[in-house]
Length: 344
Image (cartoon, rainbow, N blue to C red; front, side, top):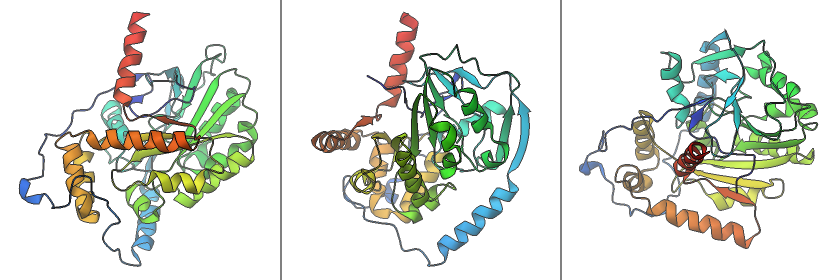
């Protein structure tokens, strides 16, 4: 049975949009296949120049300055959700400067008419209509599904803080999902919410890999935020998403965080749309020993890896009494929720 926490990986506020995948062999020929076995271990990327991280940081700061920001009117902030275990969703922004390379929410460009690159724009929602707390009574509310509610612009606009203030007296189940330690700014409100879960995404302990994948806060900052949230008595979730095959080491992440994480969520990497090629190219260049495995999973559509990993996660967590949820079959969960809704 699902908790109020819910999962976030395929819906926008009030919409369900299925993206069209790239053609099966797009960009990859048989001659490009490496010789490593499909389920071989992958122990690291090619060596990086010592100053590469510094270069990435400088580039990241520059890109933040170039992000196009604007305020837009919104009829309301809260909408019905198609997420498997959430009744409502709140997305205070459109777009996300974290610019995760694997982000499914890029389809928001198509929905909203943005032509900028994903990560280069942010729309700030201004809504005069207050949240109807009676409507969400005993319901689950997810903040947020297609943006990060604590992206850097939240420090300036405080839309998420305003949302939490409105939900302060609501008798609903709230989940806040983020990659940012800015969530700690709102500890005062978070501690007053009746039924709260805060989920922070961590899918690696490798700073280099994280920096390659997103412009969000560092892994150490995210882990420190989890630790502080738990110290303050807040129910914490480490959202291990997306799990990159042969790269994400779920056991190491759990061992590093188990003292201050209440629950773990696991979600596999789904590659759809144009970013599939980008990720596959990155793996081929930086993690060549893993490329055959990715080819097998994402081009040949072999699901055996996920079945084996799912069983391993189940066994590992069960033996150690670790509270967890496995969302590897998210699409099936969404379809089941839609079916149940039609039946009612």
